[in-house]
Image (cartoon, rainbow, N blue to C red; front, side, top):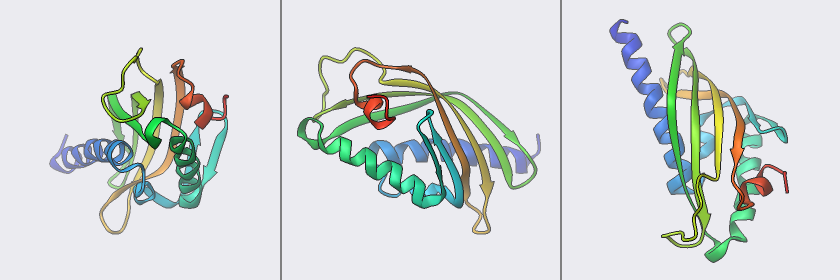
Length: 159
């Protein structure tokens, strides 16, 4: 692996961390900054959205559900494991990982917690744009396990 490949791999690993930090710490306010203008966003079987406007729509709908949670707050932590990055030339990459989401309503600490809210396979197609930043051209999340507390099901249209 050459220095350029190592650098790209580290940048993509940082993208994963920054993306989930945006959701966990900033309520996805700037989530569209992580996407290309013409991106594709697929969450479960209910959401197949196009463009940054589609991504914004998904997270705005999610925010409406958060507002109904205890204290109007949703504490989340997303953990990425088993990250695999395949570089497809200088400015394209396929990224896949397992995402484990812990979340619950109300101010921390969340009590009566029973385990992950969701475990998903996540597949990203990333491109490095003209400004040098890696962005998601495609996001596909495929839930494997959904917890019992109900929020995730509401967001994904399962309840």
